[in-house]
Image (cartoon, rainbow, N blue to C red; front, side, top):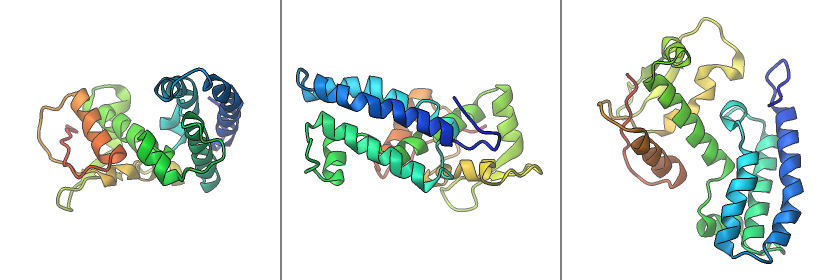
Length: 203
């Protein structure tokens, strides 16, 4: 992964999107011989794995509008290839309902939330540091937010800003949740927009 000294993600995004753009014509050709379901599997493995590589680090609420626009464009272009919609006649809303694939912003919410919660549940040095620098503010019923208590503020890269996606989640403070259940709950809320109340354990 590539970063500038100010943690700007521009070089990483340029390199990643260039590689993904290069794949689109090849996927179009491959689509002549594969069914939609098989092509969808190939796109997930070969395209989205490249597009979102390391996105827990460089893709978050503070990513530039230009980057979000570029990611969204690539996201829908490749899904239109899967649907063999080469004239762009299918609306993005229809693509979403047909393909049921997380948009870039949804995927960012999911990966960041999963990583943060797993870190705070664990006993790794990074997880302990995260818990030391943050605390859960649950004054609003059923809502949890991460509040940065560090004296070292780094602007948009502070924990408070990078973990804003956790504000979308409902918290129930009890024990006994597996990683599988955590993943399912996050998908239900952040990817499928289901009105469910997941259970998280952060202590």
